Image (cartoon, rainbow, N blue to C red; front, top):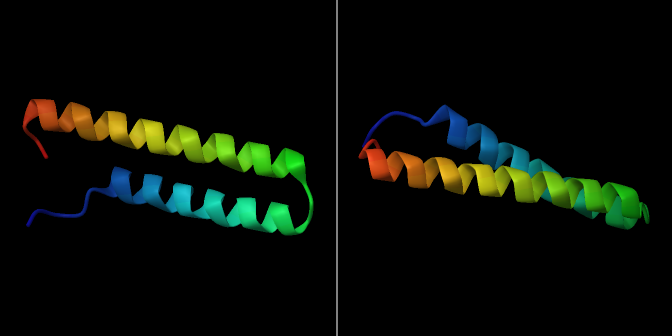
Length: 61
């Protein structure tokens, strides 16, 4: 098993915090916050999957 892939760890942390943020904003009835956290979640997940696919094509994963 290789070392830690820091970029994936950071993206996973951002995604987890955005999910927690959506829960907090839902409790506070802040629809703007929910939408913002959802957008951040989608961007982090899409970027992570694109990076994973790129690394798999290169054979580095």
